[in-house]
Image 1 (cartoon, rainbow, N blue to C red):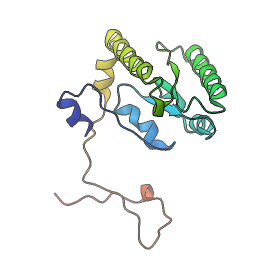
Image 2: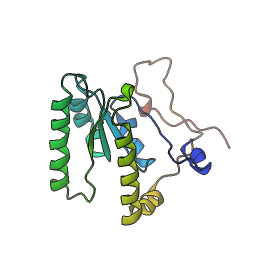
Image 3: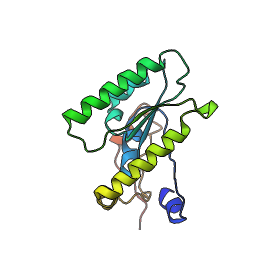
Image 4: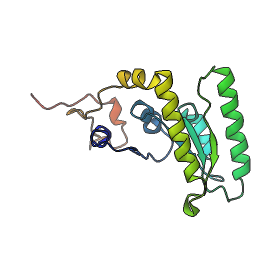
Length: 165
């Protein structure tokens, strides 16, 4: 779907994932810019750090910045971003932005950060090299299904079932 929207010349293609898990980490394989949206009081930062999501973000948005705990969350993420910048010797410093989406506050800054990151990728040559490394994301005709006899079984442990060709 991403490639189709891109082929139609859309300026922005937004893919939303929910939760903190492998799907959220895998999105970096398909996206030019990854935005991690966190909200105060939900334990998002801790869960994100545990799942490795903090390492994939190019832009951080602290949404619901008008709520208690937003300033602390902003500071915690800012410290983490600064540490990563120096420890991992990153060329891009991910901005940490405060937003209140329902009041349209900070949204322009998020769009500006996306545009700035896009320019960085183009000017540094990283966009073309990253896109060349992307896997073919067409859906596979093969699948792993839960066994009705073993509903608690992890389907990733089952053999692939592919239709005859």
